[in-house]
Image 1 (cartoon, rainbow, N blue to C red):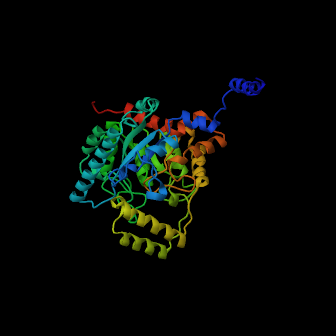
Image 2: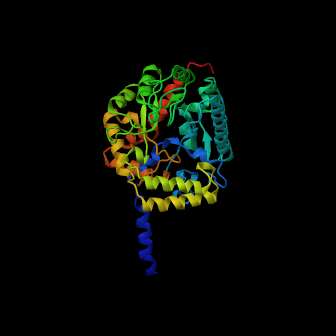
Image 3: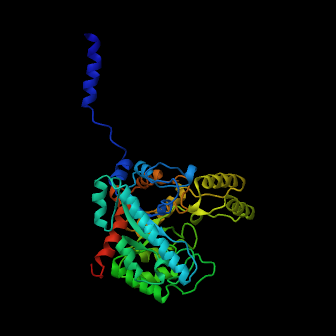
Length: 405
């Protein structure tokens, strides 16, 4: 009889104790609508044997976003990009870009439809919270590189109808819309082309958020002057922290904020720390690509494994500096100090070249929340940075839409 007394007493006492509270950073992360404004993940949708519902890994196949890892990282969704590599600026090149972008849009729709219990397409900012509350991941659609629409801007309305709510005019090289920040040929239009200015007008008319990541400084200046709606830099960094053409200076950051816009800090190593050119390394990488026999997303699983194994050996023989979470937070905290907490967000540029030490994939995103709170930012600030600011810009563009429904 007495043997039961102590265990029962312990049990009763334990029932009276309050449950252990989650750490403040974990609570803040869970309470926020956590959105990344630039997932290049749709480029994986046509890969043989690749399914977003399976758990993958950076080490095994190079990918950084899938449903199991989104759940682990407390990621509620994001903008899934229709990315088109810069191609020939010819009627044939533009048609190929158009057709590839249409196919990618269909693949995004197919993914969301096939996995409707886990994902839901969204076209309005107000739809995000109900989707998250229902336990699903939010799928907004964006377009990186405007070449698919440059030959015929009425295609912007076509992609709007398909669900695209964010568009960037340019990528690594100049096109018929705008100058790139990284084209080795330098300026062509001194900003936007005449058609690029029409692109801005049409985006405003439709209620599409304009994304100026990858655009030259002149293009950013002109978009800020021409656009009636706030704009976004969906994955960019700060020149004050690392001087790279892909990054924005403080003067322009303040102008972006004054317009109501947002910069989403990215995690792309070569835009964050100096990466020396090593001719032997470049030659080895070129030889590896030749030996693998394919490039990019068209690799078979066997080719991808051969490429990843080969690159690991090259990295070991000719290592280059790699950015880390400390570098990322320098960009983040500087942006907040200059622009204010209402004008900063997050994008890892995952599945598109992003990934640094400490931010390898979406499972690492809670670390950003922990760093923000350690720096003195509260739950409301975290909610703005993780999704609130981007959703505000999305809603502002929609509210200013002048196109008839």
